[in-house]
Amino acid sequence: MSDSIIFKQRGDDISISATGKIPVPGKKDLLLEASAILKEITDCQIRLADIKSRSKDNDSNKNDVHSKLVQLLITIRNHYTHLLLQFPTSCLIAVAPTQDLHGSLWKHCFYGQIEEYRKSIRKCLKIIENGNANNNSGGDSNSKELNRAQHHLTRAITSYAKILGDGIAFYSELMLKVEKQLKYIRSAYTKSQSNLQLHRKKKSRSNNVDTVEVQIESKNAYLSQKKDLLNSIYRCLLYLGDLSRYKELNKSENGSEEKVYTEAQRYYERASLIQPYNGNPHNQIAVL
Image: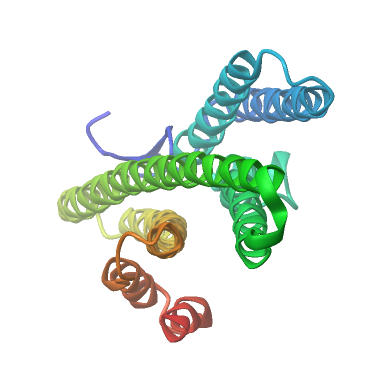
């Protein structure tokens, strides 16, 4: 189609004829596919909760349980990423009108684990603190408990650091993919506007009314996509800021390094540039 505007909205090709409306190709198929992915996420989360529940009553095969949990979390993470990158926002709202996909991804794949490790670290630190205070009267049993607590603390801090590192790598990659999409639609929109200007010069004055309508329609579609993609980048920056802040706190709990929040502050500042009137990044910077 020579007189067409074609740009991409999260996996959905939108073709606008120079004298027509925007079609919605395969909208029903997109809705069915998105619904199926959301159902698979729910099923994975149910299996995840079941494995965690059964593992509390059984200390054996810890490595096998951990492997299963990790695989399920990766599957859930991949499903959320697929939805966010490959489906139009209108489609996601249609199948999950009340669900915040970015928030769900963060909560189920990262923040839930982060809270578990932080709780475990606090528990170990409390045992060690109490044990040191009663060191003179505890004898061998107190010494053994302290050694166990120190061993668990070292493992928890190491595992926690790995989760934070994985999170930073994940959100950095996700943000790059979204930025690539944003660059693509900007380029495609600019090209489409140039094509429409040429089209207007070729057509008669009466037909130019239709061309102007298409220009307005394509601009609105572009601005909507741009807003959604910028919001995704904003959310990635917030989570990167949080993860970087947790990483510095973990260093101090390990007693190895002084806290330096430069990286976290940089992410929050970038987020504030995208949404300057949103108080969240400003509040996080103040906390630092």
